[in-house]
Picture 1: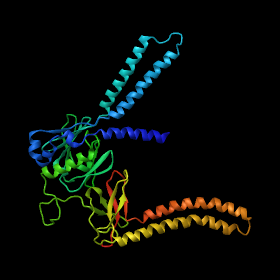
Picture 2: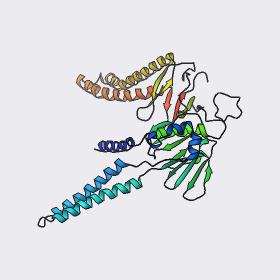
Picture 3: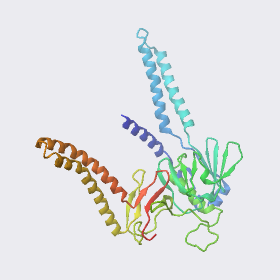
Length: 377
């Protein structure tokens, strides 16, 4: 019952996500915006409206309307001598319709998302009286959007660019991006920020547009690529940073990974799909063929080791009780201990197998992937 209710809620939310529009339907001249952003935004602002939960509001409105109708029916059943007349039916119908319309209207207002106003200087993210202004220089950085789930998309950002925050009519206050923890925009110290799904357009398209405009309109130094001798190039968050226990943490917004084996450090075009923590999405982790063969052997050994450990209690039972118990009692104990031990062994084997992986995924909202530090390091 509980599982079915969760699936129903997810289905309703999925309908609202499906109703979100492609970017080209909200900005008809999006091609010109991408090719001539300065001229386009100098002549007019682009407003992306709030997301409205039509499916959620409709379902909740129907539920309340049905509840009102059931109330009228129960009231009529409590007075069997005075059956409902035509006037009572009209009143009940009007009450149901008013309840449905009022509920849907109020929920569409209360649960609406935020707006994004694209200007020549940057984008203003507005939600319930709070405005977060992100200059285009904030998105003047290499990388790609990463969507861990349907609620947010993680974008690479230029940590050196400040962000403006204003509540209502208060003055705008400039803050570092890692201090921004608003509902519509949350920064971190890793050169990344999360953009929340509050808008009428599909979130990955909006995040990609921000990055594109940032690289076109950003007024900061040029982005550092491969020119190490470029003194005007700005530093960006690195692809990877070393952590404890010989692991390297990689920001998924800096993908794709370079063609270097994450296990031994040699150049390779071979890879294997590593599942992430959201909706079956996988990324290609570079691992050379010899290391892939070794990985397969380690995974098989881990599973067989778990099965061997799980079967030990049954074997020890037979050896310890053979001199004292009858054959039927020994078989009974063996039949009970072996399935339990094998189940535990499978779990132990799966855990052991996963610990041999060269890549591990961090929490869904961080946009990080950890890989074993290669031998070349």
